[in-house]
Length: 128
Image (cartoon, rainbow, N blue to C red; front, side, top):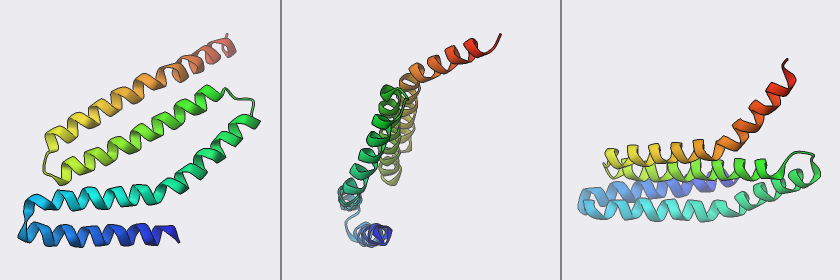
């Protein structure tokens, strides 16, 4: 039950943040960053096994491996963007959070162009 450990780390981080906000508000963001980093480092092993599984599927499949790589990049960018946006919002910097979110969306769209292009080409070949 890895999720129980992740939730436990999250709750401990939450408690530390609440306590720090009461006494030393400027240090509360450090507790959030450290707690988030611990959760990310704890999740890296699971993430590695997911990536290895997807790579093994892509090697054994007839699909273009470049697309699977692109999908993994898009997923990673989305996760990192969401994490950065959450940290900015927790710090009360909604304006910066919105700009990070916008930048992440633009990057995801730009990475998606080859997939969209190939899909449209395939559709035009199928349709008369």
